[in-house]
Image: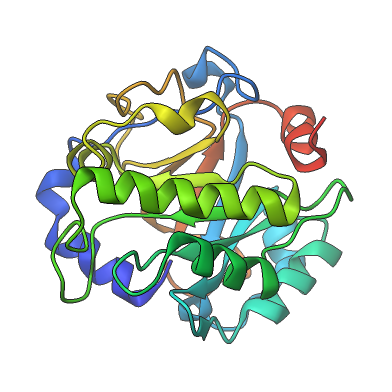
Length: 250
């Protein structure tokens, strides 16, 4: 994803071994290891210009694409990536990098929805993802918020995004961050798909209350035809028909 996230990941590499995976039971299977057969990537402007036809032809079926961060940043490659991936036949969604210490969750959800994170039932548009993880800037790992404050911020974002789009946002996080900064909050997992980051050969322990995962980011250094250099690689926990069902909210 973003360079700031990549820097953070290097700094907390020792803790990533304890990361986990989970997802919403309404949209994923209960046997993730055997069902993780649909390949995907997530990208931002750090990947430069992408040949999405080559990406699709290499077997990549979905992509999450950085749209926004905080309240004022829009990824300069978002428009090209979001459009070109669609026409290449990739099922794609937008993601927002959360900055909980600079505005309310509602403000940032509205910023995302107004800058590429809206949704349409076209079989290729996934609900947008909230990327909430350790703070790569000043202000503390949990953005200076208490566990109650963080829960309230996330709920504010999720409620606003649903009001704007009619969809439950995906949540990208790690088990260690989630359990520490939200106080092992279980509230979202009844409706919101979990996109878990754990760079390992298995998803590992799940965040508190999460029955299983929908998306799993399993490496930050994958290779894909059409993308220069390393890229985050992901799995969807199910087959393509279930991914399309998530896209169409069916």
